[in-house]
Image (tube, rainbow, N blue to C red):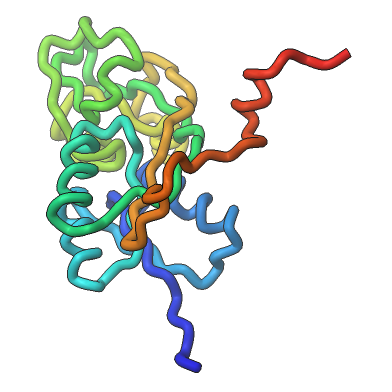
Length: 203
C-alpha cells in the first residue's frame, strides 16, 4: 500500500486574508490537520498549480470578480471541477483611515467588497487583490483609507481611525478538485440548515 500524502489546498494570499482564514477553518472542520495550505496571488495561478500537480484542491469565495472565468477555465481547460461548497462568515470588516489624514480621497478595496458600504465619500477607488493587500498599503501609506479587517486598527493603536464598521458577511465558498462529483446529477445536503427552512414547522 502506498504512503498517504497530505492533501494540498491552494487559496488566495497573502497570509491573513479571508481566503487564508476560511480555508484553514474548513480544513479544521473536516479534521484535515495534516493538510497543507499554499497561498497564491490569483486564481488562474491556482489552477495552473493544480494542473501541474503541485496542489490537490483550491478554495475560492464565489463573489470573487474572477469566479465565473475561473469556473469556466477550470472545467474546460484543465478538467478541474467544483467538488464542494459551503458558507462562512468573513473577518470583521470596516473602513480604516490613516489617523493623520483629515479628508481622505483614496480608498483601497477588493472589488468584491465595493457594495458592502457607501463609498461615495471617497473620490478615488483603488482596486486591490485582497483585504490584506489593502492593509499592507495602509501601513505603507500608499492610500488614505482602506476597506479591510478591523483588527488592523487593534494591532496598530493610534495609527488608524474607523470610518465605517461593516462587520462580517456570510459568503458562499467553492472548493475545486480533479474528480468530478456532479456527473450523475444534483449534489446537495438534504438536511442542511437552509433546507430545514423550506419545510413548514411541525406542531
